[in-house]
Length: 317
Image (tube, rainbow, N blue to C red; front, side, top):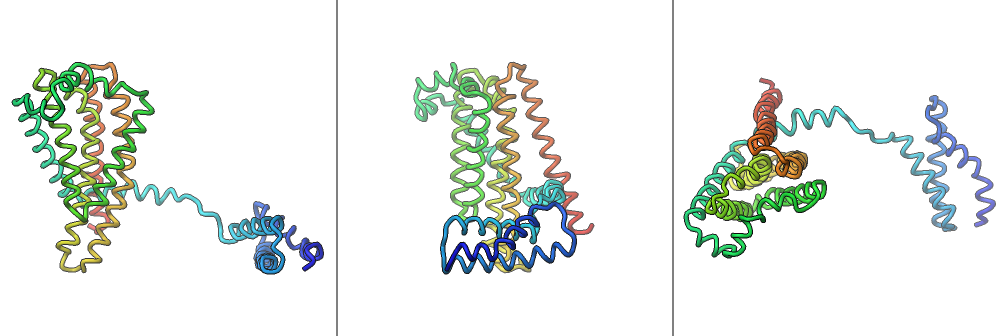
C-alpha cells in the first residue's frame, strides 16, 4: 500500500474530523457529518493496521478516533446529585441499618478494653510480662505523649489515615470469615488495655485519657463500624432472611458494606486530622476532649438521626 497516496486521498476527511471534534458547539448537520467521518476514519484506521502498520500515522489516527468517539458519546461528568445522595441518603442509611451490629461490637470492645486496663493497672507485673519493666517506665516518662509529636502533623495524619483505613478494610473483607475480625479487635483491645493499664498504674491516667480520648472516640467508632458491618455480612451468609436466598442476602449485605467502606475513608480522614492537630495541641485536656467529643457526637447524629430519616424515606414512611 502506498501510504502517501492513501493519506492524500483521505487526508481531507481526517482534517475535517479533527476540526469538528475541536468545536465547542455543533449544529445538527455537523453532528451527522461528525458521526459519518468518525465511522469512515475508524475504517481507515483498521485498514492501515492490517496492511501498512506505520507507527506515526497509526498513533495520529488512533488519537483522532478516540477523541471523536468521546465527542459523540459524551464525556462523563461528575454528578453532584449522586454525591449529595450518597452523603445524605445512601451512607447514613447503610450506617443506620447496621447500627445494632457496630453498637454491639463497640460495647463488647469497650468492656474488654476497660477490663484489661483495670487488670493491668492492678497487676503491674503483668505489664512487665507484656512489654518489659524498662519499656513500661519509658512509656510513662515520655513514650506515650511523645508518640503524638514525633512526626510533623501532616505526615502523621496521612500515616494514621492509611493505617486505620487498612485496618477497617481488613475487618470488612474478612468479616465473612468471622474469626479474623475478632482477632483484629482483640489485638487492638489488648494494645490499648496494656498501655492504658501501665499509665494508670504509674499514676498517669490523666495523660492517657487526655490524649487518647479526643481522637479515639471517632477512630475506634470507625473500627467498630467496619467490624460490625463485616460481621453483618457473615450473618447474611449464615442465616439469610426468609425472603432472600443465601447468595442474594450476601450480595445485599456486600453492597451495603461497599457504601460503608467508602464513607469510612472520610471518617478516618477526620479522625487522623483530630489526632494529628488536636490531640497534641497545647490546650487544656478538657478543651481537647470537648473538641473530639463534639466531632464524635456530630457523626453519631449523622449516622443515627439522619440515617433513620433516610431509611424511613426509602421505605416511603
